[in-house]
Every structure is written in structure tokens, then in C-alpha cells.
Length: 404
Image (cartoon, rainbow, N blue to C red):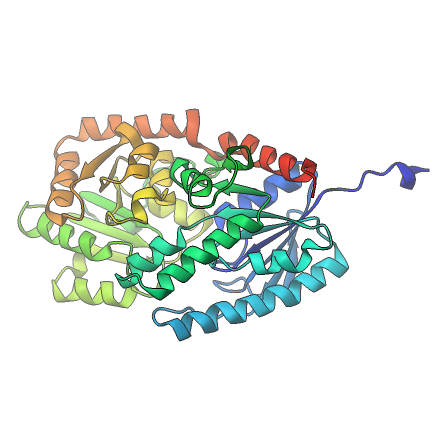
């Protein structure tokens, strides 16, 4: 009798290509939140960054990993190989998950905007598709390669197919929501805003670590991917101006992260003779990441103004704010939406103005401290992950109660 009355849990399969789980912080928060609310959650993702087990269960999330594909940096053939290999493994592992655990909803996390193909495969079996819109892939293509043409139009089509396949989509901010409704032609009632945001209890304010500061009076902090579209060249140029023109010889920048552009950034630093002003830590996680960020005075987000960055929410900005760090960034629409008065905004893609904004914070420490407190309060009051949980659960309630 007990078995007859047992409630079958709602079963979800989350599929992500660009980072392993639990390293992908947004996906991990989504997965663990669903588990905490009674869902059965499986994840398909690549290996990488120390996460090598082909299968493991962590905090109730069942993670199936495939061999990390070679990351494409340029060229249509390179991207075809990366995404083709990833899709093959996604289809292969979906069969395994279907047999071992089952799933009623596939949550596809882009890029690439091709996971709708997996959704099509299982649609006849009554499986619904939820599109988790992480990146605006057409704009990302333009930011990387500076051109449009046939591949740009192809990405627009893939994006449109992703929305068309989805019964529900979730957007990271208001700008992405507008894309879902306009370019994606989704009904407003089927689009839910689930912001990428820190889980505040993980970001505890602590004393700085002298090992990161290395005796510097002022330490800038950067955390994130180091790719060609993240504006690291602009940050290096700004530090050069701060050191050589504005007299901040006791300044250091701590760069936390990894990515394909890192060797070029290191060469730029060396060519300018700035090695004593930069620390490259590589990827840091958990306690190590917290120690590095707590050792910084100012959080920097040098992402240049372009069609992609202007409408993207930068996780690093939210993390700086949570740790009471004033922020300097370029004047981006969603950057302002996130930080408000907790940040100074430099003129678009101007390293001299970026340096000037950092200089102002250094020379106005009381104002910088006030901005840091504004940022932390802003996160706790409106922007932390806990504020996104109701929308995530509402999105899933809608997809599970909508007629197939």
C-alpha cells in the first residue's frame, strides 16, 4: 500500500556544454535548488578542471560527464567539431539517463543553441523542453569574430529553433527576456527571469590574505573567463596608465581565471614591463577564490561595450558587490541594472577613463567604502540567488502543468 501511495518525483535532465558541473555555478544552483524542492535531477555535462568522473552523485544531483571536447577558438570547422562531438555525447548519455533514471523535462543550457535537437528526439515521448538562455549566441559570434554573414544568420536560426522547441524559457535578465518575447516569439507568460546571482552565504567577508596583496597599497580584483571578448587588453592598458601616468606605483591586479586568451594577456603585461603589478592565479574555487577576492580593494569588470556585453549580466560584478567591493566597469545596460550606485562607469571601451575611475576610488576611500556597502545591501535585498528561486520554481511549475 505504501508503494501505491508513493508520489513519483518530477524528473529533470539538465544539459550543459561549456563547463562541467558543479563548476558551472548557475547550473549548480539550479540543480541543487530543484533537488531541495523534491525534483529528481540528472545533469549531462563535459569533464574538465578536475572534474573527471564519468558519473557521480553530489548533493542528490546525478551527474553524467562526457570527455571534454577541444574548445574551438576560430573557424567554422573547429566549432563544428566541438559542438558535433558534444551533441553526440549528449544523445548517447541521454539514452543512459532515460534508462537509469528517466526524465520528463530537458533543460538545455546554451551555448550552443543546438540542444533543441535533443528535445526534438524525445518530444514524441512527451518530454518537454525548457530553454535556459545563458548567452546571446549571435551577438557572441560577432563579439568574437567582428563580422556577421552566413554563420551569424545560422546562429539566429538556431536561437529561433531553441525558443520554438521550448514550452518555457528562463532568462538571466530583462534584456534576455525581451529577446525571448521578440526574437524568440515566446508568450510572455512562458518566460521567467532567473538571474545569475551568488548564493550569499558562500561569500563571507574575511580579512585580506597578504599572499595576494604582496605589500601593495591598492589591489584590483578580476575573476572570470579570460577570452578575447572579455576586455583584458583594456584592463592592462588601464593599469599601465595608473602606474606610469597617475602615480600608483604601489598597485597590483590579481587576475583569477582561465581561458584561451590568457597567454596573450601575459605577453601584453610583460611587453609593458608590468609583471610586478599583476598576479595571475589561474582558476580558483571555493575557499581559495574567496580568499583572493577578499584580498582586493576594487572589483574590475573590463568587458567592452558591444551588442553582447551590453545586455549580459556579469557574474563577477555580483560577486564583487556581495563582498562589499566597489566596482569599475564600462557603461553597459545590464551592468547598471545590476550594480546601480555600487559602481563607477567608464566611457565605452576607453582604458584612460577606466583608469580615471579607478584613480577616483583610490583617492576617495570613504566614498569607495560607501559604494561597497551599497552593493552588498543591493545583493541581499534584491539580487541574491534566493530572490531567483521563486521564479525558477514557477517556471518548472508551468512546464509541468502545461498540456503537451
